[in-house]
Image (cartoon, rainbow, N blue to C red; front, side, top):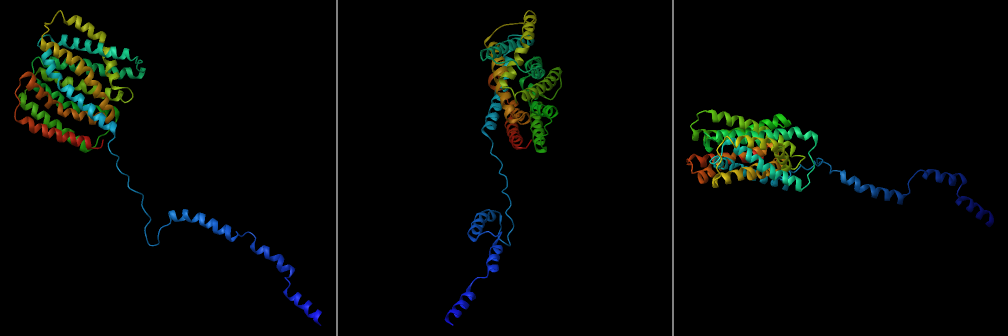
Length: 356
């Protein structure tokens, strides 16, 4: 009896073969608890990075912060401003130069001297020749900036004062912006155009009031100089984007050297030529300070901040020219000058901040 009861007890607690064989099939394909908990823990941080609290809106991306003006932009604005200061002395130095020589002689000698300086720099630094595609633009720069503007303004200054000639400089920024828009396809904003027109109107009103508003042959020279110079500035600014600014004006000057030598040989025998202190200083400054160094920093500035914005800095040039005219030429300055200066500076500030 005792043996039979123990056998019955062993049979009751024994695991049936079928049940034992079915046990692995129930867990087949399931991840073990430890592995499953590890996988969930690894996925939890990624899920929490994108999950949001119930009842709250999904976080929106941060608004882009407008970048601060770069150092290159500030340097470009400074270089363009230095160019404007250099150009503001062009008319007084031209008036000094014309005291001892004729306009054709003055322009030819001015071009020869500046071309020799530029050619010497290009040769000393072993600058390679420009690309074939750039020569057309260099011809426009040479015709407008090196020859056209100096010659036409010199002819105008024979019968016009420097204050009246400042009308050209007052209109030049607006004309340059128009040429740039047509040439490069850049479309400045309405605020830009409104400020540019207001600044040009203020300068024109001031300079016309100074000269009486009468049109003359000198005015025709001045308006023609305005057009050719705007074209030269626009093309030079475009070239200065991939070519150093001093090389742009340097190659344009070298390109004009044969023509300038021929012009000087023809003009010297037929025009008066007397070197005085004023005429020598005026010729040297116009050749080196204005025609070469001034254009070098000017084109570098235009390449950095853009042609339209750089051209608006020239709105201050007529007022600077009038100041130099008072100290160097003895011209009288009316009380309207400070008011015009404030209006011009406000317009310059607006154009520099306006999006182009």
